[in-house]
Length: 107
Image: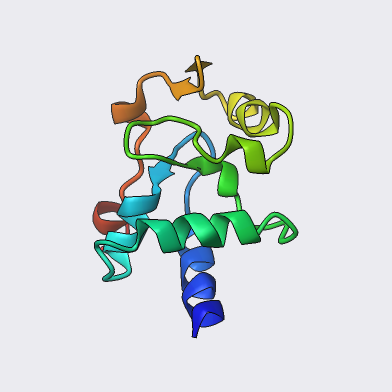
């Protein structure tokens, strides 16, 4: 059931520390669905009314804020910058060092 999958995704997203980011694919891989990045994207799109899911910390595999239009205006970037993440032209700067891998962090 999709809502169960979404809930599993939300539980992982809630663990992303402030000032760190991860990708749709990294979450999908951690949950055992290596090709499920789109499902993670759909879950992020659907969670904007759930206050404790920091969807702004989930970006594409290149560190680009591909989901920003779902936040309205520049809100995704503002939320990340408030956590100390630097962004230039919709791309996270120092992405490699800020990347949070659930597969490695949640052993």
